[in-house]
Image (cartoon, rainbow, N blue to C red; front, side, top):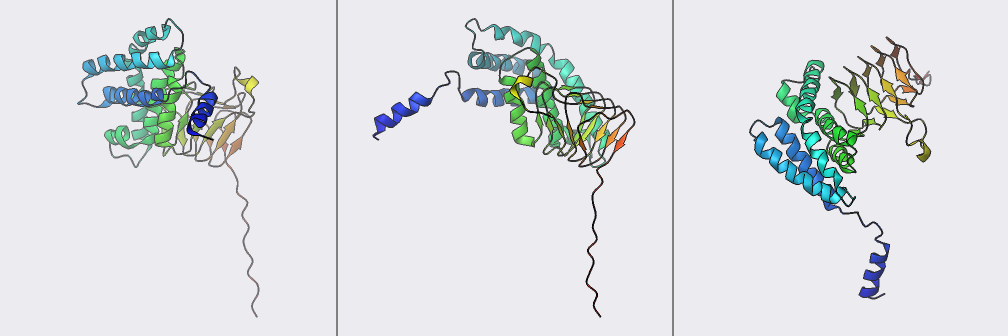
Length: 264
């Protein structure tokens, strides 16, 4: 097969006319600038908002495929939400510094805690998700996922003062609902009980009520599953049914003691 034939075959199989990977790269630049604008004390807010608007226009060109580019109007409603997003993220940071005895300062939480970073990018992406902006919210949370190991779908609904400790391996599905003052540790999955395309428009992931703590590697599945308020879910627990308020759920390991042969 000659070079021209190879090129023709590759072009034949490139079937997605809107698949431009520079969108992914531009989303990452936009996400970083957005994060710095909200948190870094030396980053000029006014100047950066102008830069962010320009970058958002570029995202509209790449991600908004309707001819009239109606997505452009999303920026004006989105930017108005940024103060409240920052207010809620400050509550998340305060929850972490108050929950984790290893945290030495709130500045450490903002700069060094992967769980906080994942929550921050989720909250910034979630508002774009609610606006119906295509693809960009998912690219934002996948960028955070790649950096932190925390996979939060931008469609999830998460309340105030949310604390993620360690974070690696956490999965929170699109239709999960997490209410206020919830603590989640590494390896936790809030997932779907069944995986089927026809369930796309249904609630597939669990609801976590106020003041729940979920310890490492617990798995909670199903859209009808509700973890009642003030409950504690122990490490490695597997739940596919609801738990009433004020419950404690533990996985009980099977322990076998090796019997040594008798030596006479």
